[in-house]
Structure formats: structure tokens, C-alpha cells
Length: 376
Image 1: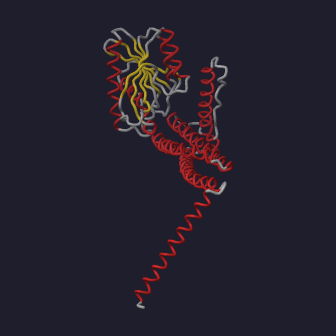
Image 2: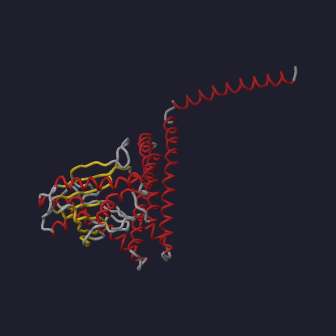
Image 3: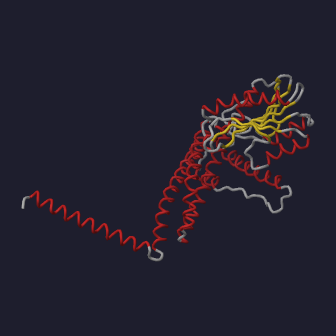
């Protein structure tokens, strides 16, 4: 027999053996899958590995964000930034009792502001002479680290629990949710870089529209903390423009500001117009503009209800102008489409004023959103 023929025969035998082993392995696996408990254990193992990989991605975003905040603190002379960041990461706010709804908004306002003040006071304590812009960057960094830490811990909790209980159902639920949370965590991580650099984000759309009007303001004052107001003359009307005080990374207290301004004018206001970024639906175009009724404001409740209450008290109609964007676009560097939409939103605001008010009226205009990088 020639060497070639011998090699061919050996190869055929090897192939036959390979096919036999493959079929045997297939039937063994099929048998194992139908043994009681084995199918569940294999499924749990496979699902766990996929979720663990995604959890590692979130952990990386968390650690990167912590490192960036530690670096910011270190640059400003803080000796032990790690313990400070770890303390911030674990902070939480307990929701007020909702079973008894009496004055739930007032209680929520107190808790939210106490939480904000606590972080601000801690930053001022470790860096006594910090300027307001740098402090606001650290405050936003603290929010990012805290949010990422919460996402990471919750996913880790349910993953460990599912493995302990050998629960396929719980793992399937995690598998559905985790990809969205990974995407959210990535957005938070990108947002931190943007805020640290002091660049306007998509959510700065409302303050940017207000800033265009502020350029012609005759008078400016602070109606509430971290919030500025200014009077502008337009086609015989008096516009009172309100926005968070820039270029700090803050949303201010627009609801309280609107209530205070309207009380200053003794309720003689013809209309309130709010401008804000809004979450778009899949398929909608970034930068598209819509007009509606009500307070355009992504607020847990206290600021938004302040506007609604004062509007009801003096029977003032409320208009809303929104510019649509995704969550990632809202908290990361402002895109060209959103920037171009700001001037279009302003034109719509002017159109509403001309159509629904008359000469001599007072109109309150509120640019809602984080005013990072947007002055007045």
C-alpha cells in the first residue's frame, strides 16, 4: 500500500471515529438535559455567565467614575479621596411615607434638599475655598458615582440570589433587564466626562433657550438658590425669564423661583411657558420639537407642583415646549441637532407669546434643565 493510500485510509478511520464520538456526545448531553435538576443547573450556569460578564462592564464604569472623582478631589488637595468617594457612593434618600399623603410634597422637598445640602456641605468641608463651578462638578460626579453604585449592587444582589435559589426564572428576568442597565451605566460614565469638562449637555437645551433671551435682559436677580431671573421686553410684553444659574452644573430650583416671581408680580402674569428636553420614543428624530400644555419638567414632584399650585392660585395657563432626545443624548455632550433645535424652540416660544398674549402682558418663561456650560 502506498503512503498516500495509507494516509487516506487512516484519515477515513479518524473521520469515522470523530462522527461516532460526536453522536455519542450528543446523546449523552441529551440524556443529561432530561435528568432531574441537571437541565436547571446547566441553564443557571449558562445564564449566570452572561449576566456576570455584563455586571463586570457596569463594575468597570463604576470604578472608572470613582477614579475620576478621586482625581478631582486629589487635584484640590484632599488627602484621602477614596474614603470620601466611598462614603458618597453609599448615600441614599428614604422616600416619605405615602400611605398618608397629607403634605407628601413638602416632606419630599425637605428630604431631597437635605440630601443635596449634605453632599454640598461635605464637599465644602473637605475643600473649604472651592469655587461654585468646581463644586457643582463634584456634586454631579457624586450623583453619577452614587447611581452607578446602586445599579451595580442591585444587579449583583439578584444574581447571587438567583444562583443561591437555583432560579432560572429570576435569571431570565435579569437577562431581559441587564442590557438596558448596561447602556444606562455607559451613558452615566460618558456624562461624567462631559460635566467635568464643563460642556453643555443635551439637557442644557432649556437653559440655552433662556440664555438667548437673557442677552437682552434689563434687570437680573436670584429668585431662589442657584436660579436666576431677568426681565426682557418683547413686542410690548414683559418677559420674565428664569433658568438655573450658569455656568455651574446645576438645575437650580425653578419651581420655587417661578412661585416667588409670580408672587412678586402679585399674580398679574398672563402665561407661563416651560421649555425642557424630553425623552424621545424609538423612531423619533433627535431635536424634533413639540408643543403641549402643562409643566415640562423632569422633577420628582416638589418643583413641578410649585408651578402648578401658583398657576392654579392665579388662574394662569401653562404652555410646554419640548425638544426630544434619548437619555444618553440628554446627559452627554450637546449634539448639533439639539443645539440647532434651541433657536427653533425659541421661535416657537415667541410665536406662542404673540398668538396667546397681548401688549402689556407679563409672561414667565422657564428654561428647565442642567445649565452646565451655559451662562446668562
